[in-house]
Image 1 (cartoon, rainbow, N blue to C red):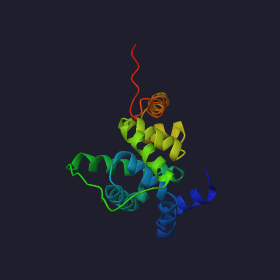
Image 2: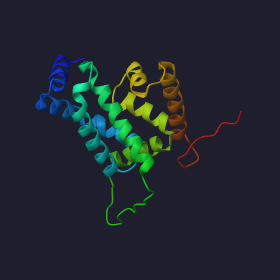
Image 3: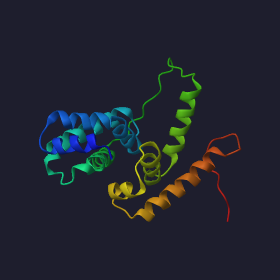
Image 4: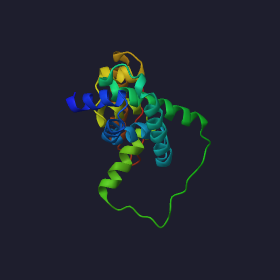
Length: 180
């Protein structure tokens, strides 16, 4: 772990606003990705991140181990996201027909997002925390409050499902069903 990160975390716990801001700014992408793995719309993700940052700011003095700031912050965000998902009413947003995306990288990103969105929430979250955010199995077990074996199992199951999604050769994207 970066010594500057731990020092900023200690300062944030002690009440230094600038240190808290540096920590949150350094986690900006992680926070968005975690929220995106639970919530579907960008606006909901932004709202969740803002609420989580505010909650964390008010409670940072309660953090016992400053070196665990990142996992603590992600737990707060996940709690906010789960609450928002429970409270959310169904709203269907129609795409703007004027807007066209033509870049291959965007198409690949959309296809990956579609595959990830098709996973069950616990599997999607495991993939995003591990592969996109770089959390270790141990850190993920702490964040999600489950056994390390459960995390490993979720990662394996998610990889299998993603492989079947991308290896589908029927011309349609979707899950490959294997009969046993």
